[in-house]
Length: 310
View 1 (tube, one colour):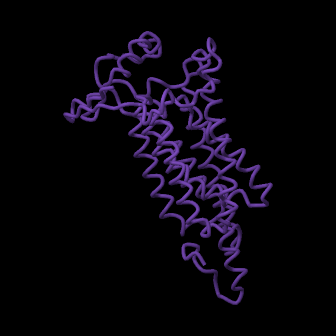
View 2 (view 1 turned 90 degrees about the vertical axis):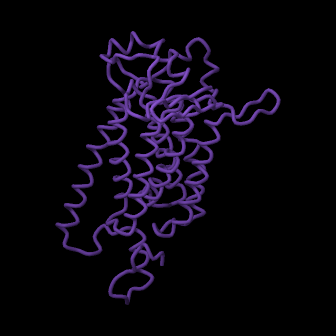
View 3 (view 1 turned 120 degrees about the horizontal axis):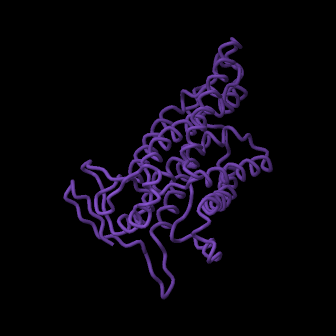
């Protein structure tokens, strides 16, 4: 497949198949998702002590959360794009060629992960704080799977990084009428927004924010709220550019959910911060790691900074 960036003078040849063994094909989509998962787990495992979470227990939660995420991501996509599968239901189980929705994956991973935390007798909020950074790593790398599949692109653009491929032209040609009904005029032969790349950059920035904010967090769950709000804010904007969104009538499903997440995260954060200020108590709602450090050294005037890892 040829992918061109005319404004940058780039002409790339890509193949969505990474490896072929006989008739069995392994797609780049699956490879980059697995790579993102591995890097996310390694990063979170190394930082688990900063959140008062046992690394081995965290790995157990990740194991079950992974399966919940895969099932949730596919179920969410299939629910809103069932017309693609109704004539061949077995294709629902063909994960290798794409068709996964990030919000569905997050919902599935969080629900199953929370159940695993309860079984392991772990506090859910510190695990979610830690997982938020892992989600950003996985999502940032996972978006490159969309590049190899030529998915997650937007409407036409004259910006230098506008992208064109046979896939984008074919998709826009097939859906030009439906897009026009939504007020989106497209020329299939012209470059489009590489929305996958926008989201990669947004998730990378979110990861860096959380990485450096770790030592400043004030309560368990705060970093996860930042994750929800930051990702939702970017997704709300990026989803508005896309031409391959999952829809309910004339509404973009993920854009609605992203906007709701931003509002919910902001309101929750403000409420909790207000309670902390009103308590006038240094230990009120302190993170689990701070409490554990305090319990280990009760004679100390204050608990060591969580970033020290002690």
